[in-house]
Amino acid sequence: MRVEVFYGEECPSGTFSVTPSGELPPWTYGPEWLLAQALEHDMPLRRPGRLVTLLLDAPGPHTVWKAAAVEPDDWWEILKVAVYTGEPRQGQSVQLLPFAPATSTLSAIGQREVCIHAESISRSFLASLIHALSASGTERLVLANPPFITQWQSLKASGVVGYSLSRRALLPRVIQLRALARADFDVEKGEFSGGSPITCKYPERSKQPDLVKLAFGGESELARAILSELEASGGVVSYRAFMDTSSSLDPRGKSIARRLILYGYVALRQAQVELAEKGLYVLLY
Image (cartoon, rainbow, N blue to C red):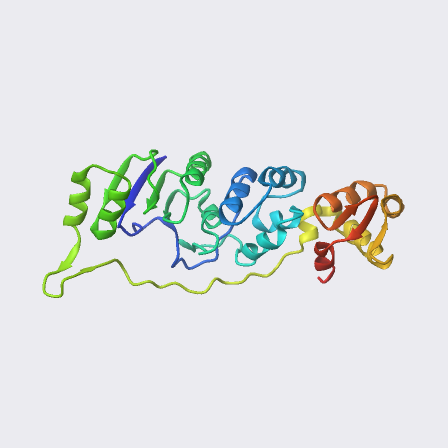
């Protein structure tokens, strides 16, 4: 895969672009380790290692919605991002969410030629993203205004922005001066002209899928039945009673009951279980 760095340049035509002015909502299918790292980049995710393990435990492809379905503590924060993500659609650009830039870049996985506005993305995440894109078959990656990285084959700086960023990256002075020479400067007005006008739009809200279905797959009805039984029992029972009730509903009940605790739908405290906030939330739908 060829990696190109543009400082002060727009995304080239013909590439699949992830930019603030993108047309489509981002989609977030990707490897579990990259998804967890993206979420950790964009929010205070306390235990990304746990999220990776829980994603692998649950059935189906890994998305932000699935992460919200299995994360027991930080699921509200993940849900905040998930509601603005969608499914893959035909198109050449997706929106870089201002509150979830790293997560938005997961849309690029599997695309042949990609351009990403990377000024708000860290070097450590870009290194992982480059690895994942190369492994998924991407042939060309253009990074617009990223922090300085070393995994590139060509670098171009243009205009005042290119000059400023190339200075910050401690690039050779000849590159800095060439960038400044390409700047559009009006002598009479004494001002520089920048890039294209900003044409952002509000993030598009998507339809929420069934979180229990994402977490439990074909066993989601049993999981819902266990939650409903717990609610009907007053929301708090002993751990033993919870397990006995779960196994009485189905031989698989104990396994599902344990996962309900691990995924945060039910809370275990001092040999008692109670319906957690997450469990109440999914019973609304």
